[in-house]
Length: 163
Image (cartoon, rainbow, N blue to C red; front, side):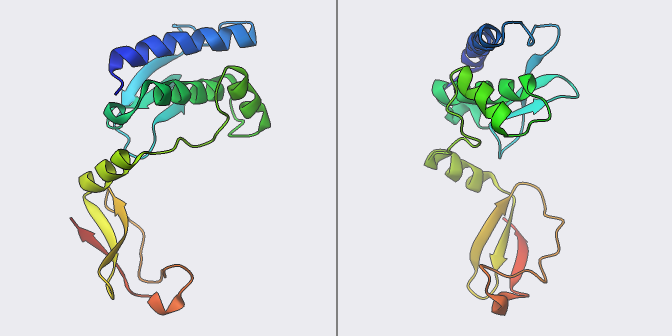
């Protein structure tokens, strides 16, 4: 389990790796900062507008130090390669500083259960009462014309419920 102190320590380590790889200190303290957010579906975010690398404080207690390191390397690669998305330039930088090159971090079972247990809304199949997807915010989408797994006989069977 990683703590905020672990995150700050790893942040400094990863910044050094990036500087050594790139040859200059793009992520200086006066340019980019590390912050925490309340996101529940992503470990980290690179916010170009505010020049912030953000880590989810909701998911942090379930993250290992390796998860934090990979997440920070992933987001710093976005900062060094803006407007590249997850293309080959971004990936080359990410791998170059020691990252695994993956676009997504694997969630462990504890994180998935935590997300489900804290969700406030769900979309259910009214025929089977099976939960299709959990949501933390009320979905604005109209599910009346949606169907499940390419089965058009389920049109009109999806409903949003409050948990």
